[in-house]
Each structure stands twice: as C-alpha cells, then as structure tokens.
Image 1 (cartoon, helix red, strand yellow):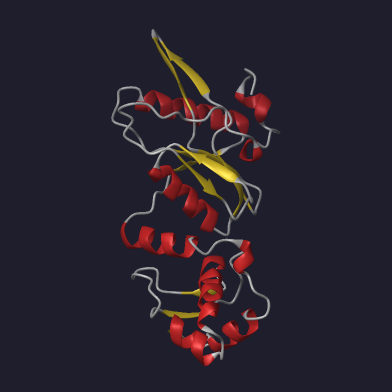
Image 2 (tube, rainbow, N blue to C red):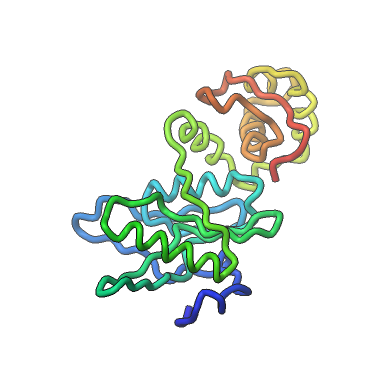
Length: 222
C-alpha cells in the first residue's frame, strides 16, 4: 500500500488485502514461519510464527469473524529523535461490520508504549477497533487444534448431518453418537466438522477426545 494517512484508508478493506510483506527466515530466528489455510476466507493467511498461526486458528473458529488477513499496512511513528514502524498482527471484519486491528500484546522493549500509542492514534483516525491478540494456550489450544484439523469444507456432509444432529440432541460421547446414528466409523470426521462449525457443542474446559460428550447447538457456528 502506498504512503498515506490513517484517515485515507477508512474505506480500504485491509482485512481482504495481501500482506504488505511476508516474513523471511534467517539464521537465529526464534519463530517458525508458516501459512494457515482459513475456512473463513478460503485462502492462505501468512503467519510469522507458530503463535500467530494459533491466533489465526482462533479467528478462523470465531463465528463473529467474517474475514481476516495478515497486515497490509504499517504505521510510522516519531517521538523526538526516536522513530520506527509498527503493524497489527491481523486485520479483521466482524459480522456486525466492525473493523478490527488485532495487535500483539504489549512488549517489554522501550518502544512498546510508543508503538501502542501509534496504533491507538491510527485506529481512531482510520475507524478501526483496536483489539489485543488472544493467543490460545493449554487445553483451549489443544481442542482448537483438534477441531481445526476438520475445518475443511469437503467434510460438511449433507447426508449424515441430519442423523448426527438428531442423535446429539442429548449429550453423548462422540463415537457412541456416531454409532447410535447408524453411521459408519468414517462419519466421525463429519461429527468433528460439526464441532468446528459449532453445530455441535462440547465442554471447552476439558480435553477433546473421541469419547468426549457433544450435543447440538441452537444456532450454527457459521
């Protein structure tokens, strides 16, 4: 994106733009570069680290997020003789039309406060809602990884969905519900996809395994 003021990008859908630049690997880099295929957008999201990939996974799972991408812009700041640039971790748009600039947690480096202030000023001028990065950890990350493995649209099966939803109107273990629905073992993958979509719910405070209980939701996840 060419140089311009924050107020001039109010109408630019940054959450749909290609990233300004891709991170590069180098000797001594502590993080792993990766790309994440998003079920929300149907495209790849550039992630500069595994941590960012986990955050992207969470955005992808969130029903309120309709689009997101790696940052397509950066903000330059100056404070006396000090200067630098800063970018959000992601740009996103919500179902109710909010435009989110999702930022890394506050950093311990001296410039961290200046970068945050620069982001806050740019967000106000550009009409973004500044949101801190929510990186899942522990049990939350473990079950998110499990259901994300089944995020792909080809696992949405119209033939098995009615039987699965009917069976799980009462909480029951996943594998037992598939069997009680009269479906083959391969239909378990379709049940996992319904967990990703939010059509089936589960206890998010506990590990998610094939014998975990699941039940139907009142509304679909996406």
